[in-house]
Amino acid sequence: MRFSAKYLAMALALIVLALPALAKPNFSGDWKVNVSKSDFGQMPAPSSMTGKITHQDPSLKVAIKQSGERGDFEYEMSYSTDGKETTNEIRDNTMKSTAKWDGDVLVIDTKGSFGGNDVTIQDKMSLSADGKTLTLKRHFSSSMGEMDQALILEKQ
Image 1 (cartoon, rainbow, N blue to C red):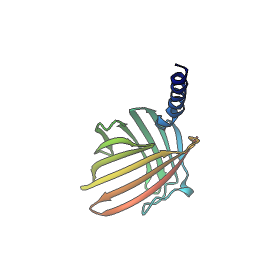
Image 2: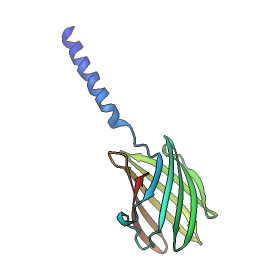
Image 3: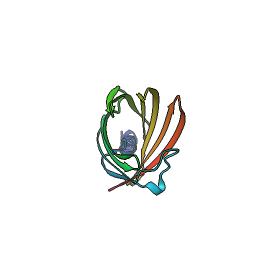
Image 4: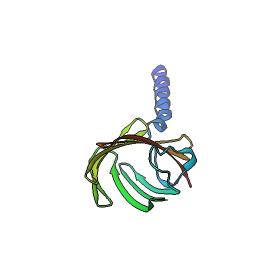
């Protein structure tokens, strides 16, 4: 009896230690893009870009404010991280997205149309171990070509 109780206690301890590794990142917070550390591809860098993320899995809400040579721009997106399709509007353009976890990375696939051009966007969001840096890797694809961006956001 003692022998099996010892192994049961060890097994339970291993399970408890593994639980934090199973938890998904929480992206909630106020974020600011570090323009100098980010790569905007062929697009001009904004003069400022901030975001507010509210994340209560599977609900993820993102509100972005951006200023730059193209003017001021604000939009909000809502996603469901369990793979259910969501619909959002950006400047009167309907965007349909699915979001799902790939390990600790949230992958968001979006399809829509801008100015008559069909566009697909894949975002990969990851959080640093200390929770202070959010990395967003974005791939655009349309009839006009493809482009990659890497945005580095710092928690405020």
